[in-house]
Image (cartoon, rainbow, N blue to C red; front, side, top):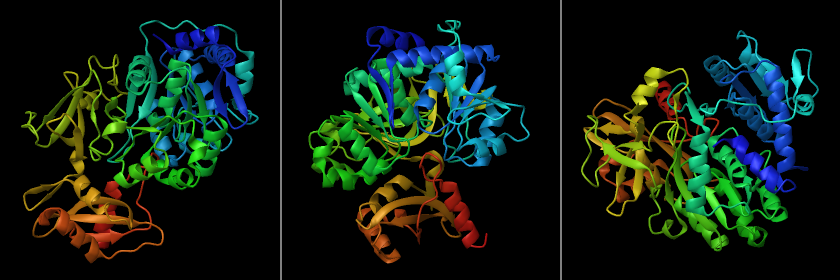
Length: 512
């Protein structure tokens, strides 16, 4: 089952229905299918072969969607690049995946040139500006290509290399297949959330991020309408939801926080919404409560996902407040075990590293492997089990609780301290906007807990107040020994906190 066949079916059954809306552009399924066929054939004419990699380094736009579908129809593999990445990070991706070609935009051209310097020549296709001498025009290729979908070997299913966020080191490219998306964003999203062709989905995060691209996959697989926000702005998002009669809103918790003012000020603008999908990080209870009070008619679905396996758990509307700190129960078809450092399953209720299995890699939810990294693939996927690196526990009802990343666990005086537990405790304070907890060297206990705290605008707290709050709520050995207040936590391109930078900052400040 291929993306091309889904799109062909939609084009035949509802050619005039809007598939993609961005700014003032509106593209129907018939137009999308025909344009991506022609662009795919132009790519073939330029020498693109089955299995070649093609980078997509363009903003959220119709062009992003057209480029992706055309790449897959041609038999090549798309490599989305987030616009928030630095030049060295982009250079690492290009050096790692060695793309044959790249879609770029006027605003990304300069960074791409710097990142690609010294690499084997990459064919540049510019999406939104007149091409230079060494470039090709995406519009011209989409208009001038031959009609008809190119033939691709049926057994070839790779469609994307999605690079991990790199919070603990160099990003690795997870090879994802069309089957991965069909199972997750086609079958499971419909089963769990009731998505249909009648839905109109607004994407608020970068399409280059798997969370954002999931909404593109919903459009391809369900035939629903995709509304793209070029750059996130809470007021513009509220305006689009009202104007375009949006029914499904996808976001990360950071976006949810930023939307609160709009939802609380004018809840009537969100009348058509029936579902909000949230993933990407822990979803604070305070944000859930405020969203629910403002929009009580909306079904709030939060889920735990990762690049290598896609969605794994879901916490439904009825469970958001009965199990507010859980990431939910397992998706149907997902196997799970929690293991100790020796690979042995821990006792019920105890914390262990989360291993998950969904069948043959590349066929269901699990990635096919890391691109060009057989050693890392073998270390991560063992007899089908994906060693996630997340420390978790299960309660008696089957609800899963992520307590930490394995590498972020602090060992203080022989006691394991899960940074997420300390972070959630500190987040109970209304003055705190966000917090990150890391382990730092300690002469007596080996490691000590350090909390880096980001305050809400206009709010304040002292180190003593934060430590006292923790002392009341959690064991004494878990409370922070060091509290540092920061204007903003360091984050990667996906908004995740880069904890190793905090450890480095602590070491520098300590003179180590």
